[in-house]
Length: 233
Ligand code: SF4
Image (cartoon, rainbow, N blue to C red; front, top):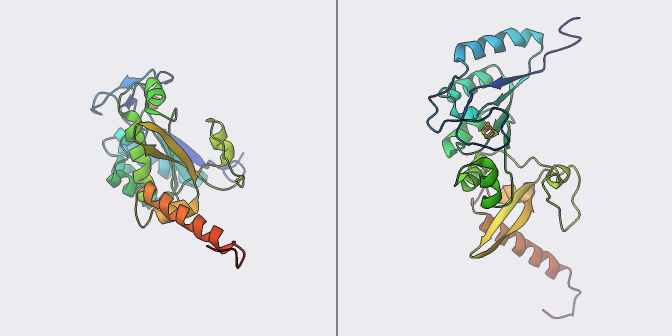
């Protein structure tokens, strides 16, 4: 058996046993740690050594998970090593610590993949599973920060269907999508599937309402262009 025959393409790093949420389903039996200083973390030197030794075996990517990987006190250093070694990056996070600064740090890697867990379409469901009040809005804010930093929507309609999401209009099975919620005051929010064009609009203005207004305007213009001549305005 040789490294070429069976390359070691990806390493999973469980960066910490601690987590800032207390999910009912967590197989780590969760070690709730909002302060990030009570549970063991993976040392930076060990991380670096593992990467260095795995590269000749074919290592091309790492996945950072936990516990909550963004709680690692040296996460910025670890992300720097991933970049320096030109490795692909996947981060599995609950999104709570995806601040604008952290999202920008992750986005410095080439084509990073970030998986943010949402366990329902509303705070009540998500927080019942996740065990912490406010974590739903924090996860959404984390996703917004990631999109703002340039990390694109990456779910296909098939993946979203597993969470009970379906589209009112036909969607290409390969099209990357994101679920966008638009609050309606006291009424239930409206949900839309945003594709790459929706993401592009939010480069100019981060508000989903703005992007939706641009989208609706474009649809109206397109509809007017299809009105036959002489049929009035
Ligand atoms: S966010 Fe992940 S690691 Fe943290 S308690 Fe929930 S399932 Fe466990």
